[in-house]
Image (cartoon, rainbow, N blue to C red; front, side, top):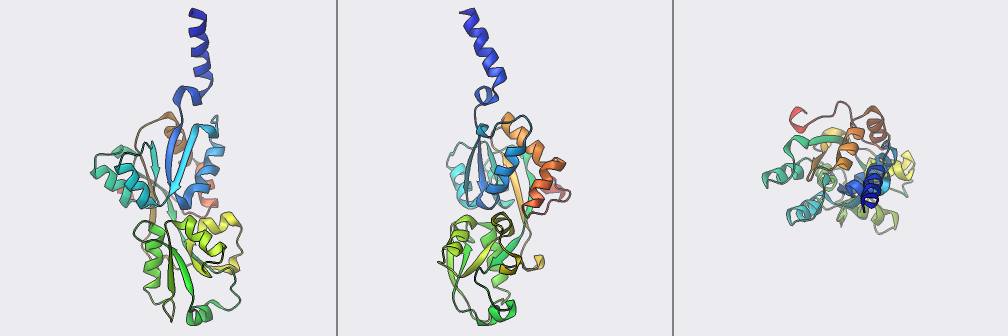
Length: 248
């Protein structure tokens, strides 16, 4: 019996996934592929130690409020993590702006100059639901500047991942997604237009720890390292000197 107990201790110490269990991460849909790339590069870490659920920040927030057992929330805004703190959910000291997102208008079949497209377009335009998704809210702000001469017919996705698929499958001929998605997909720069940052509120993507785990600690430390910031930047996000929401 003593030998069996010793063997269990050795196994637990050698296999972090057994010792710590999975770290359950809820992530905004736009950042999912970037998160997966980050996890692959965390030193001495098995990707299997992380369980990822992706969706719109608003819907994830509602799930957490209703008791969804996530350990870490990577939102596409700062509003939802702050709202969780208002409900006494989360570790206040963990609130951190991990990336700043960029919006892009994707037109896969564009053949004319952008100005002509903006003046002549009369079709369906996809965007994430502004009630749930920060990128959808940013898209609405850009549209309100009078970008199009004729008001497009909106097609709303629950998040930017669904919005991307609407455009990809032809349910909409163009739409607003995150720049990161287009870079990940290898989309030609001729097929998308990047609005000036002044046209929409800055998309500060913040994370908050719900339940502290060693997996969360390793991930956050790597995201804040030079190597981690380079991965985030390569996927289309601004990083700079990122820090707590209060200091930015």
